[in-house]
Structure formats: C-alpha cells, structure tokens
Image 1 (cartoon, rainbow, N blue to C red):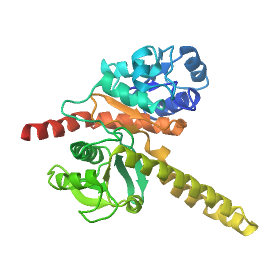
Image 2 (cartoon, helix red, strand yellow):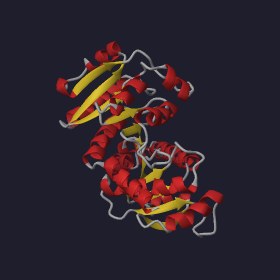
Image 3 (spheres, helix red, strand yellow):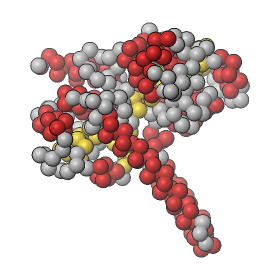
Image 4 (cartoon, rainbow, N blue to C red):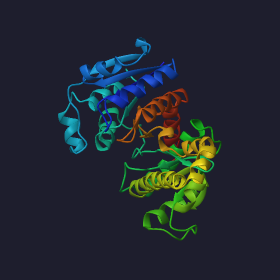
Length: 336
C-alpha cells in the first residue's frame, strides 16, 4: 500500500477540496492510504460528509498553518507543528512514501530539501510538471525551484526527467530538448549556449537540440529542459492562454440560436478535447531528486487535481522512480 501524507490545510480551497480529493483517490484505488495532516477538528468535519474505507485514512493533527506570504525558511524552522513540516517528517522517517501540498511553494521547496533531503549527488532538485500537448504530455523541468541554475544542474534535470518519462509515462527513449529562442545551436543566452554541448554529449539521454516556445504544445519533445524562471513563465502562459481560449470558445457558442444549437451538437467532443488539455488532469509537479517523493500542486487546486496527484504518487512509487534517479546520478558520478 502506498502511503501519502497530504497537507490538508494548504491551498485556496483547503480543507474542503483537499479532503474531497483524498476521498476520491482512495475510492479509486484500494492500494492507497492517505494521512490527512492538519487541524483535526476541521478535517473530521469534512470527512463526515463522505463514504470511504476508514482503514485507508488517518488524521494527523497539526495545529499550525504556514501561510503563502511567510518567508519559507523561517516558517519551516519556527512552525514545527505546521501541516507542511509534520507531513514532510512522515516522509523523512519512512511512515509515508510521498507528500502532497497545494500550500506555500517556497515552504514545500525549502522543507523538501531541509527535511526530506536530496539524493546523494543531486545538485538541485527541480519541479517537474506534466503539461498537455498535441501528442499527449511533456515534462517541463524546471518550472519553479531553481531560478539561477547552472549548466550542470540542467544536465541533471534532463537525466531525471528522462527517467520519469520513461518509467511513469511509458515513453521509450524520451526526446529531450532545451528551451531556446531559435533552433540553431549558436543561439541563446550564456546558460543555454554552455549547456547545449553538455546535453549533446550526455549518453544517458536522447537529446534532440533546441525547442522554441511555440513548438512546445506540438509535443516535439518529451522532456523540456530550462531553468525555473523560464519554466515558470511557460507554465503560467500555458495556464492563462488555455483558460482564455476556453472562455472565448464558450462565449462564441452563445452568440446566436444557431451557435447554441451547434454547441449542443459538438459539446461531447469538445468536452473530451478540452479535458485532455486541462492541467488539473495531470496532477502536481514532483520535486525530483529527493530521498522521498514531494509533490506540489497549484494553490487553486480543486478536488480533481488532488485526487490525480495522489494517484500519481502511487505510480511514482510502483515504478521506484527515486531508486532509478539515484542509479543514474550515482553512475554518472562514478564515471567522473
């Protein structure tokens, strides 16, 4: 059974959406146990609304909450009884296999490194969300953890991302590309120019060169490598454009009687199409390279994203991703 520590107090919709997502996950899979970490009275009140197998849920009382605006390092050190800190300790001591939170990104990133710790040899753990494309999904790595990354960090991102896509998504020999402003090797800023030849000469990955932002949604690459500033801009633009397009399509379909009739006819197909491009369907962003699995979901996460993220943890554990990442990184260190 995969054990997931869930921050019940994190995010805009906590604890309502968090508890609902947890219940939906355990009702989907009998092989998951969720440890809901948060204010016990509030969590119990929400759980009372649902039918579920009580053996798959455990409440861990945490009296404090780390707020979004708090300085992450100080909050992790001072709020020892917060839902984030207590849940991370469950992963550190082996009580849980994974930690999921929609709470403070900074606290999750700092806590993941300080409490759970990095795999030996991993220089910087990157956040790596799956993003929808024409051909399925690609891994965007890094999207928010390391805004001042070095070339050696990006090389490790590429290796870890390849392990993830091959084992979790089942993509054999995943195509790796670095985000650039053109396809030519000589283009890019200093970081990209220095990293490009290193990726080109990394035997553990299938490097295909540069990828421009406009080609990311086409699915040309399975692993999209960049430092966190660029990755976060790409991710937020993805979310913004996606939401705007959906809104404009809906508005257009309501402009006349004819368009309303047409909307009814195409609704099932359109719904299925839009669902495949909904970021919530892909779960959260794992912080790769830690000794235990830490996953960050959107602050605005609804129940469906929490559910999918918990199920994502099950897949991660079943495929022993951490051990495979460790093997790739240690092997490379030995070669050096």
